Image 1 (cartoon, each protein chain N blue to C red):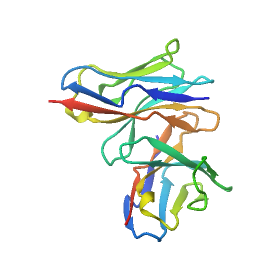
Image 2: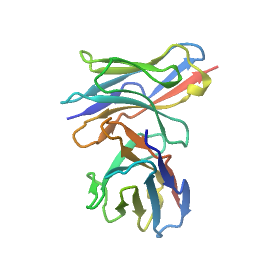
Image 3: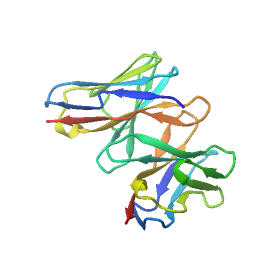
Image 4: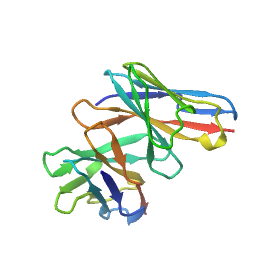
Length: 115
Length: 113
């Protein structure tokens, strides 16, 4: 299966600042990546689909101007939380779809805390 | 529309006893189904997957699941629980058309000594 990394694993930032989270597919190229958000003791919520070479597709209710997604290359997608507020504190997880297997390979997640 | 329902938000079993985590799905297409486990503050680990081959699927750590189309179920079982099995378990359905997947709400498994 694919190996997916995320950086940083955890970050603390002040309210009003922006934070960038990286998701890398380490062993194969991915034209599509997914970003999820997980609230404490809750399930994963799909935020958006990151598309290499085109704009990201956001799920209903997700602010695209707040959660900026850039699929810079076939192995890298970034999620930038702009003007972060405490309610943005969450666990953010990315995934890469497997080729032909319908399986998703998940990154280890990034814990964001906004103070 | 596709959906997945995990019938129990919490399950408690004693160590050494069987585990049953229930999952029902709804899909307009032939689904692919997965079970993932998440330990506290950790990422997701794939336990097993069903992708239209054998209906009884064996996974890691002694877990298995059976796809039952007539019951639209994909319940996760393990014959004998271990303390290390305490975690959150997610049943997931893949809609295939656009690689999107849908998560169940999760079941927290507690293992009693």
